[in-house]
Image 1 (tube, rainbow, N blue to C red):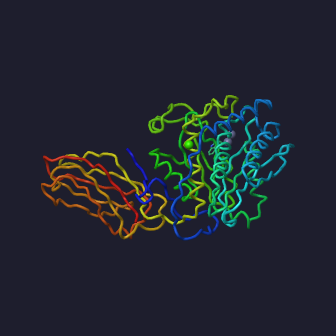
Image 2: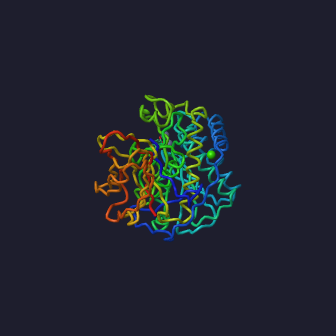
Image 3: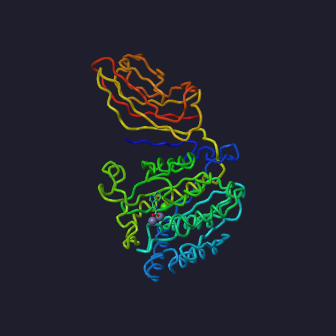
Length: 438
Ligand code: DTR
Ligand code: CA
Ligand code: ZN
Ligand code: ZN
């Protein structure tokens, strides 16, 4: 089944971003007008892999790990900081103590943008003591480093202010990110309109999971992956398992991506994502084998590009669902001759409020003698809007866009196109079902 939340022709190759952030704190929305999307550059996965190779070398030269309190961690911080300083970032190292050792957070600000609207991306840079931590979490650290360097290469001047962070001592209990949140005044914290977390995004048997926290951030990532035709799942390994938790607890809108850790990939997941069912997403989780060989390049590449898409768009100031947001299902559904009704469905997400009075319903049915057919739009709450009722007799095929006043229906939810063939001899199938929010 090919489900995709595609964008209108208006958007062309670029993609648009939805809504204002809805965090626990009263979200101060940005400018109310949706602005045209910006198309981020491709993030070269070769560059990300080079950062991973460098982190691997650091671990190898420092007892095999990059853990809190060990020389390999401070060397990792110094490595990342040097690249950011050279790229024009304003960097700061925040020290803290834990378990008798000094810990370090690295904070990097890209000069410019509205200081009252900060879009922040973070990854923990520490590993466990048992290994070099290349997927966990060199992958997230390297991906946001390369995104920060891409911002510099582009000399991006976003509406909102960009901040990046590499956390210490996550593996000991989110220690570095908690320290940052607890030591940032609430007046400064409330300026953070989005915190994006990336912890394990290159798992060797990857899944494509999106955090289901702030709906705008969630939709941003989902729209990116829908544009690639790659289905995503909600990250359900439980809140609080990475550095977004302290931000979420403080009321900051959060989101992120995850490719899976020690949980096992199901056969259904293997069917849609590839890889090996019955095997962990990352068999080297927290092990010495979490080396540069423990990375799936495709997942690392896709997630690095998804990060760029989110950073470029969430900082560009677009805040309202743009015209032409499309939700489409192009899977073929056979219509039984003179038989039971069948349906094609789309799940609308990220559209706040009710559907419009001019909801565009695209119907593509391949069928001889359409006088046999009854075609209905069924709203998420079960309300039925008849589109076609056995008219058209000998005409073949329905390929039409209907305008439906759906203003009493909540937009988000699963909408169905229901088709029944009520007479024998002619047959066909649903070829496509599309909802366009004008
Ligand atoms: N706790 C993280 C790995 C991890 C496990 N589940 C999730 C969910 C979302 C992000 C990260 C994780 C660690 O070991 O660093
Ligand atoms: Ca790429
Ligand atoms: Zn870990
Ligand atoms: Zn981690």
